[in-house]
Image (cartoon, rainbow, N blue to C red; front, side):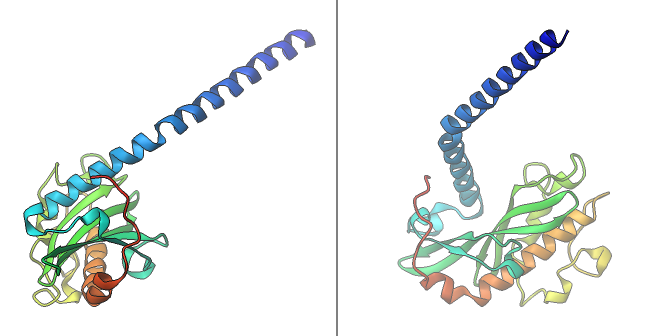
Amino acid sequence: MWTTIYKNALILAIFAIISAGAVGVIHHLTKARIQNEKEQALYRVIHRLLPPSDYDNELYHDCTLVTAPEWLGTQAPVRAFRARRQGKPVALLLQSVAPNGYNGAIELLVAISRDGVEGVEVLSHQETPGLGDQIESRKSHWLKQFKGKSLATTPLEQWKVKKDGGVFDALTGATITPRAVVQAVSKTLTYGQTHWSKLFTTPANCHGGTR
């Protein structure tokens, strides 16, 4: 009996090793392709927020890494793409994170000009399908309410959902998610406009992506 048990255990161990090895090889072979596809998707999002006709520099070569966890929601460096026309600043596209979504972190890309928010897109999230996932622009127009908002026309204390005394609509059945996004966008806007000049003069250090 023990011989049979040892034999089955050995077979299972061999299958486990082969499976783990296969997963590792596949991950290695597809890692670069997956990263490339993520970069392509990111640039499609950038172009939705800021049409290429609005600037004349190469965004993927004019990018700097920023670490500002209090304002951008993550300890990790995030990318700030600088859009310029004839050398003059046009807009910043800042990656940031809303760390307090209903199901965890929500990754954002926020386009900012001197006049305010040019647009917001959600890059990734784990929010509840049919409720919190309405923050996606392909599922609702909820994100469009940020366009044109600025700290001059909308004081910081009003950057809340209407239920909390602010000016932003919530989502039916999902208040926590919009609260998190509104807070993250307001912090990203504040950071971007406060550090506007510095962000546009910091040497590029995150180029190398694909378009």
